[in-house]
Image (cartoon, rainbow, N blue to C red; front, side):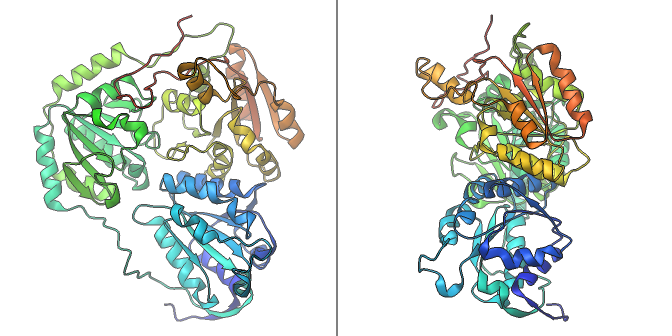
Length: 563
């Protein structure tokens, strides 16, 4: 520990710990049990962003973390304030995003008495946090804060919650901040086993049909450059998960696009015909694998992951390598050579020509894919944040991402209402980048109150609403599998989004014709203001291609309308 100590309250100690961890922004909402923390925050240089719902605080911290790789921080009061963070914490947990959530709690002596605004938030969040704490001694605050940031950001990243009884924030302590963290039960493995790495290299050299399958773990490990170098040396094609988008340039000749339920046909065909899958920082979730028994039945699998719990969890792995993706790829590059893939790459090129992503352009109605293409052409280096639904898939399919941390989306939990507050976090993290929230008219209404936040804080996020009058992805499933019985998915004419934006003081634009799409995008970018664009798209446009639930990933439906 450092030799210097200073007397201060627990609340001030919390703020000082945040300073020591390099925190520059907190997303939060005040309440009775965190008033001492807010009072200490009043004199701090840390920026506090007042969201209008605690769930948005967690999502904004998440977006900040995804855009930067740093730990995002959110703060809420006890009881309902803390429970409102739960969906955001679960979202971060499913996608392995480092956030620290600070929650207020009733005084220690009142815990368990059903006190006003009391909730057992450590018990509630135990399954959805990497670790959580209840502070029972104010002197433990510096140690716990140091450990929380360490746990959140190391190994497989994830959310950590610290529950802080109010009396712990008012007690005086001798503050000293630990220089290091020593946790006997927590020692992530970073270096891959060299024998396993050599074994993998030999398998790669023999493979004639390899596919590299990359996930969000590559981005977390800052290993995107190494992944590209590895793919180019081996001459193996690369496909990514939804959360892995951006880790490999879309325009690269070895890139197959996203795989899985709404992936490209050629990515899915390649996986199914491959003789070797090299999985890096991915977890073989059901949206990727489809029917497990039919997944890549002729392929051996090399799985590189920092979390040993993911190895062989969903599919059998032939060569497991536990370690940080960046360090393992560094070592693997020393041993691999070009694989005999010339015929394989030629076949994949044929699939790309035969089964491209496409849509039939509308002369009168706006096609959502066209909007994504126009956003890309107007601002190629934009950070794209999405809600969850059809628009999310169109963004992943049609925006040509060229670098990591430019596609931010809820993958594992699929959280509607995530995009707008996450875009707030991303824009604060990257103020010089244009940030778009690609949204549906359903998802946006789950966090539309944050228009007040972006206006008050002058955060020029651009919200692009794909307004089709439906809960679009659910409607698509009802069309395909429930005989078009659109049970409670029609939300047409539920709100005038332009008036809503204007009511909050944001710029609102409505676009009904294809010719108006690009000018509206350019106006939004040039305005420098929080802007909402209400794009009226075709009501029954479907995401295509699509693999039905329970089918093999090469059993693909082509849903693009021909008329």
